[in-house]
Length: 631
Image (cartoon, rainbow, N blue to C red; front, side):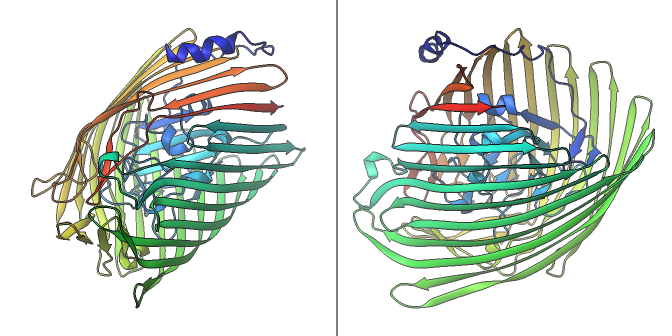
């Protein structure tokens, strides 16, 4: 009913002349992983593509909120990136994550974008309206990606260059405002594109009302981000240069706790094609400054004292090269990559004292991936030799097959992958509420041995995919409780071993202007002592219904998560919950469109953590805005 109240008035407004609707057929199965703008590799993997239409139809301020309908996509905590501390915004797939660091590599137009110091992700850097598509490949079924791709990779791709201008404004409850301006211009061999985005919100209380005190304030965020990209292209050559910046400030839920980040990144990618060969070379440089304040709050939550102020400057520089050769029945992709990261954490303790930690890490690796097709069957084999920079060298092999006939495709693969500890895990101490987590300079890399098998079915209007997987984890880095009670002390340590196994399934059907999607993930993730891996729900799923006809676009979605634990001892239970989201957009005259989003429509309260005080997720949030496009 609420959705109808939004859509019906919009449809009565005058509309521009509509373009023909998109085809009613389901998109074909994607069998390749896109590495850069121009380089891809065949893989026996379960690859999910979220196109610009789906991104637009899903509510959420940032990309992370719009990807939660994908089975297995989770941040470290259940919180949105709108209020979560950046250090908890690492993303994991298939229930592997047990701490804030990503077990998934994030790429933007082929450039790695995980934080250089801690591996987490600043999701507000990426404007959803500027993304052409998102590709998600679960599992390490290819050796092209190295460190951070323990459980897979997520690739964001910008809209192709064209002649367009766009401006938008959205406002909502809790004093929320967002402004965006973007555009691109295309010449014969050159193009320039860019965007600027500003967002502010007063946020919401992250502590339930029943235990809230005078020390508690709403968790809020203000950020400005922008990007400029220059493209050069001829028949066989492509080059792009991109510069992007981010400035954000966050109030973390109490009067004395805040954090801020300033970040700038420069990236370039050049590729050249011959008849059967292709080379691509990329490089990037990122400089970042992170500041945070930490406090201790009394049990009554009416008194708060500052414990320390933290400053973390860091920088990274990296490069990669790729060579791909293609024949009628086989392909090979080979290359090398390197990255150097340097960062230091300096804490000014109160009432007195100074604590420092940090250093630098230089990693490099070489890799190769080969596939051969014999009729309807393809075989895959690859490997990576990688030096982690701290005395460890890893060889990560993979092998698999894919067989297709008609509307069916069967696939299977085995692989070994790894993740080296970040400088953040090695050297930085942090505090959430009255829980302090210590660093550990003796951490070893995490390793994973995985196997999976799946079946894809795609007809003209119906598609389905199911995958069975098993991941054996060694030396998983987790936050181990050393002291409990009102003040909790934890330390990052390598767990002995863990096992994550389960099923992921996806069903899609399109009829006329409607499309429905059902997604589900079963992730039984446990340490070998039987305890569950923290922050991993055993069951999660989503259901989404989308409508698109002429100038009208609307969607409704339900996301559901079962019980999970906040700690390694499985003492703090986070009950399961479900939320309901809706979005609608109506095209008007002269390039204008009207949009409305509502998240957590039923205003469901759910828990996201214990510190040891319980913390809660987002209440009902709504926004309405006007967008103008010129093409």
